[in-house]
Length: 257
Image (cartoon, rainbow, N blue to C red; front, top):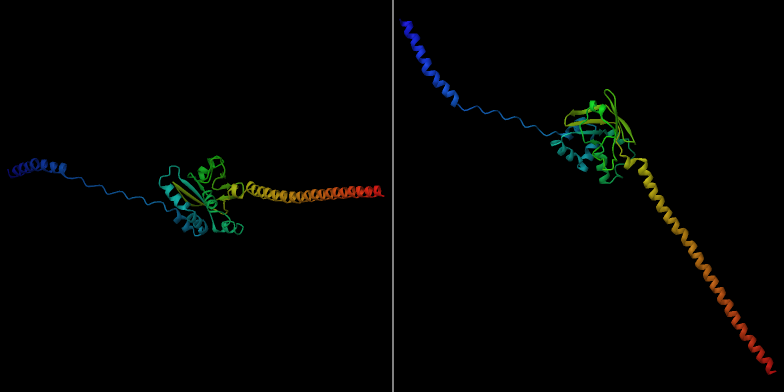
């Protein structure tokens, strides 16, 4: 009898308490989800600083403000970027004064020539088609590079220099940074056509100067010759004039006699 009463009491509690618990569960406020961590901006220069042998490249990136442009492009880039970072030894291999002879605009072009406006891994290097555009590529198609690739190595050529791409400093979309042992020299600044144009301009200047100097003596000579001719003609005329007067006087004296 007692067990039956206990059973009935338990059933009563279940029927009374369960609806209250369910209604409380429905009205209880949901626990707010924890905010997702905000991704930090990609520190492009830190990658080079960590490499410890790209001080010259870092300095030019800063001086030309191209480094800041890369950071801004990475924030909303769809295709990503690829940077070829020359080592300090690569810059030291250049002829002394090479960088100092460049204008600010030419230094910017030199730096942008090392940046490809697309993310390239070693796999995509194998499937890319040449020529490959750079950030310095103009509308007429100058300042491009050619890339050839094997299984785990790629070669990049500017038409002036060629070097291997073997060491990836960073390789995670949207940015890839590769170390190169030579400075990529743009053909419009360092190629044969550039040297030829400078030589041609110099030759034209010399020709113009030589032509002027060659013409000057000739003009002076002609003027001197004309002056001499005029002087001789004047002397002949004067001599003939006085001769005529003397002849008239001589004939007058004879008539008087």
